[in-house]
Amino acid sequence: MNENRNFISRFQIAKLKLNLNRNQLYSILLICLFCFSCRSTPDSKNVSSDGGVDENRANLLWDQKCAVCHGVDGTPKDSVFPRPKKLRGFGIKMGFLFGGDKMREGIFKTIRDGKNQTMPSFKEELSEEEIRALVKRIERF
Image 1 (cartoon, rainbow, N blue to C red):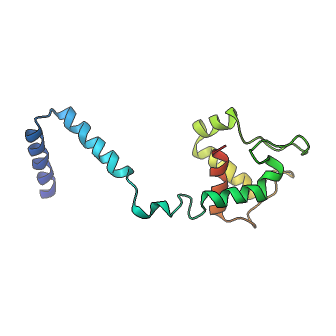
Image 2 (cartoon, rainbow, N blue to C red):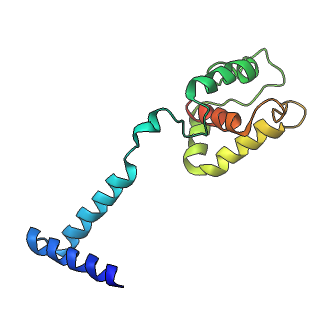
Image 3 (spheres, rainbow, N blue to C red):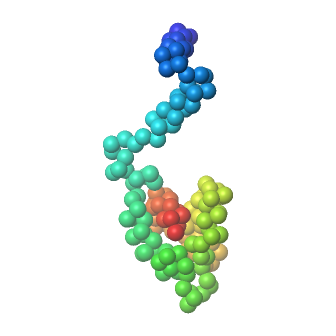
């Protein structure tokens, strides 16, 4: 309780010194909190957000495992039958925009478990981190 009083008294002192109204002060505090939460650590450049699989590795996995059917740029070749899903364009962008995590999980499960007889399962060949990196790779198309 004493900590709350210290914070409140500091808050009041800051308000008096800056001669700001309550809304202005709250706005400044929110901006500071946002900036603080978005800052990166010095080591964050070396660590990828998907658990250690960097973008270059994801590109290599795409070229090795996916591009044969889905095409280098996410557009399948006409010669592939049955025709795989097109992984680029307006429809998939909207799916990621509005579907978000649900869309990502659906693609993750399809890569991991396969689909029907046409899309093979990659759960024995790829780790969970590699599959998640491929999902992010698809999202970048």
